[in-house]
Length: 341
Image (cartoon, rainbow, N blue to C red; front, side):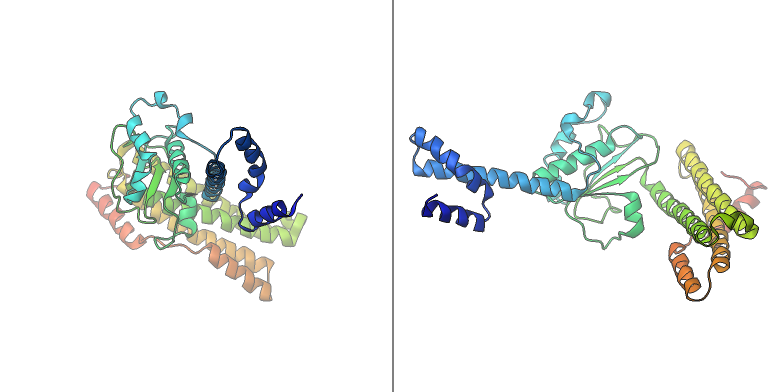
């Protein structure tokens, strides 16, 4: 290998031009056979570097987006949902709505492909040079706030709900949505109307925290007593109480959700109020039971540490139960009995 070639390869490495380094010998030979000019050779070489660089950048953006699966419009079955406005979806894939800082909202039944469309739009945005981030409602509720900074756009998925198909196909989903202010532009795949999101996120978080408290207390007790835990009847009773309350919390949320789906949020207002009151009471009971268990299995510095962890796990924004109870009582007085409607 002569000196010019050694220096050329060194300079290409220093300039971080791997494709040019890899392709220039083969391309030089090809251009020589075609009697191409030096400018044509250089143009082809630079084009290959640019194309390869764009490909790698797109791959990095797709990886950073953290898509759970790879979905594109090419794999979406538009025939399975004839009411979906295919022309609009294709238009959205051009990602002009991102530049206009608009939001895309898809509401409808589970299994209709909302998340598929959201992922496809996110992929299209990555391919067009936008930084994207996929997230779920659980992640959003657990730590993200309206001040959290996101790439543009954000792809948000609100899973685990079943509601009547709305605004997914035929309806124009573009336009500013006041409640979606977490990023400059959003695409949201959601099975639930916005009136229900507050109930679902707040209730789901409480149920999730209740489960964590139960696991934490049970784990602490098991770690101390091991196989002998079966002889600790009071500890076992407290853990059982936590389990029962958690199960009841989840059942209450599901019942309220079904009522919302069948009769609408307005007709289910009282059921929602009762559910929130019960969730608050249940969380108080679960936290008290967890404290009893921790106090029984730890002492000194370990007890203080365990209680600090428990306080973090039990931290939540409480519902206004005084107002909720007043609404429930007023309705009971009006109809002469307790009613869910």
